[in-house]
Length: 367
Image (cartoon, rainbow, N blue to C red):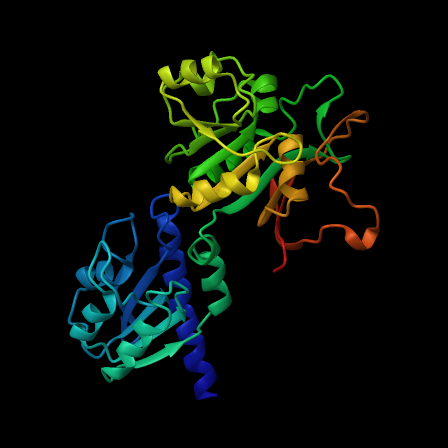
């Protein structure tokens, strides 16, 4: 009974640390989201979180916010404290100097520079250290960081809005608006917490979108337009509004078009071709990872979404399901080569929520 009660207390304070960690969304990339809570006699005496890449880590933020001495208190942290010198000194050393009586860690840091070393340093110094409280939730909160640090590739979220019968546009190509205003605001919040957003040339031709998060507070993501042969007009909004945009093209793109875009401040990335002569998505993701793009939101259209699924490049799928029937129209997903039901792509639903009249389906690809 006592063990169960103690576990319940630990989980309560770890949930608070997780809530604090989420405050760093959209600001800390490519670093992890981390929250910390310091407790004495059941009272929270300090809280902290990692606010921005290059600034204090959560533990240091909490230590500096403490209203009384930390010695003998319990510190809850969602991710293992770092043990190496980066932009900031090792957090494990700072904790050891403060002498908390106990440290509770949500999950181990997969970064090879840390990965158990911070925990071992605490234990070697005589500080009681427990690992694995709400571990699944702590890992889920840092799914982006975990993939990026292990593979060097961005975590890819594929998002689209569709009707009940699976259409993303009418037969004539009209698509504004399938989803409701609340769902549009949700989409803008999603943009604000991703490093970059990607669309294909077809989306630019059809809608001439801004691809910003103007309906919510937050930083606009880097915009990436896949335009294999640079067929888009240089006058498209994403090329003329002065915001950050990359165009991904192949070597077959006309040189004069490339120069015109570059004069407007648009960087053109030359990417190798896939077997169909289009931008090789694997190579593009590798290049984005090298540029410290840890999270990528793919908004389509249908051809791009189909390519990401066919190449098994999506990690997360968000479908905004509008209560509408369109009949004949453009399918959300085209041919991905599935001929037998056993070969269909499988997903696991993380959550299903309401957004005005719509449903938002949030799913993961099982690993």
